[in-house]
Image (cartoon, rainbow, N blue to C red; front, side):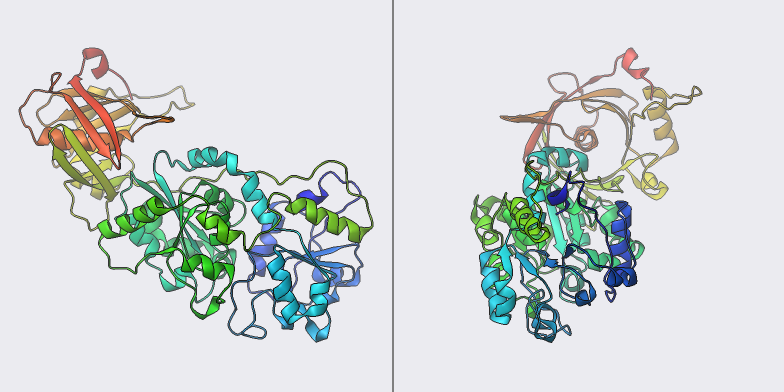
Length: 536
């Protein structure tokens, strides 16, 4: 919500941390990362302020001197927190926090939807009389960033794949608590060239678990290419980039619905979810993902069916029950807070800040268990992480990146052209020399290949022949999609193995590689002397 005050030299921003949270260390670190000026809580309690902004009613806010504004926190009030406050009240609307000692904790309750005013009135009529509907500042950033979707997908390396985002709230009823194996299960059961996976974890859960321990728990999925989105800004950019969201009862699902993404329910939150709330209605009308133990074909089919069944605008209708003033929230909030300050706001319009691009996965699979189906000149390829238990035609590994254990077991070993280094001292290998050396050094390898560009590769088989592979993109009405050349090399490796001793001269050297629903034309030809001398 900081853009509300952007450009106003009359405003000074100070931050303090209300004590008592189990997650306070990471909260303070997040503020310090943006170089905000913080003051100790004791000092904050001694001073007076023109305006105090808080995102939660919890803690001793009453010790702070000045008008207090309670900002929207999360997508409405959809769950209760066991062992906290009144127990059966919606978190954020609990009288124990909203009305401590019978007095409202805030001068202004900024709410996201008129329905929330009615719910506040049911627990505290005085607080409801001090409320205003302003919308949701977090949603404003998501909406303002929609046109950057392609940019975010490019940053993530999504390509022509479907981006499936898992979201987990915090606590014992979260997705990660109830279905901890789901990220790894999806990572090894969904074809790598058709789906990209990302995970959004609630900041509280990240703080409780710790970054290192969380990464170790998720190691199998991270090794398979899972994107673990950062807790500030990055998660929202990943959500904008998503095609579908697999969720529990956390707020992220309603933000996804507001973006009109496919929502798939994986857990309903148990007794934390409040019946009749916008989140409960969204989950009740979403496709449900069955529990572990399903074969990968059923898992993929369920997700694919949910995406295919998505009707534009259907999910957004549930979000509309949680978010009003969409596209105008910051203007409404500015009106209210400047009114409390007794100042005229600046004449410039207030706009939400576009989200920065997310980071790609820290780990990219370097070895794949490859399934192959050959039908004439068409080769269908499905790649899964090497640690998958799926039956496979061969193991394909990237030499120099994959482990030596995988390299020794691979039927196909390949490498990618390396970018030039800054050093003037550089040793280079020729395509012909490197492929011959790989076959000599790895007896189990049947094909050695070099990826020179997205459309050009050179390979050598055990027969000793060098072959040039030219890959054409899949042309669609509004885009050109390129395959990962490594997937195409697996198709060529299998195709050549199925026709030993046969010529690859045109037209016999023409085949088609199918990954997902896309077809990529491929042509093979004997490598020319100039191509054989290309360097890596």
